[in-house]
Length: 164
Image (tube, rainbow, N blue to C red; front, side, top):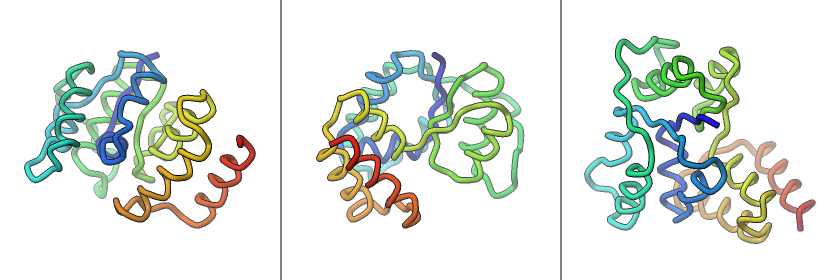
């Protein structure tokens, strides 16, 4: 299954040291726009996160997106490139946390999945325990500025509780 990755799930999973979940869940046909790769490898990133991101990106297909579509003026260049690459490359899924980019992906027939969805899928596949899923979600929120609405958080807790 061809997957395109935007920056935020890569960054957040690197922060909690679980970036490998993407490759374990979906294999190695992960496409990453060059602008996304550049964004996640910015100076000032924690050295351990930086190493994890570099290792991950070496296992992906980094692609230059020529003449990306401008889906919305409020979307970043990287978001527009990730969505353009997903559409042009016939991707089944877009790894993305940005609400607008996720809506645009759905309109284009591409399934979006974000950081939280990746954690829940990893839990369902028994790659992490329900306890770990909750702990990692709470770490993202408390220490890494991961923002989700209270309703989404409660739904995630319900899914985690059901799995325990």
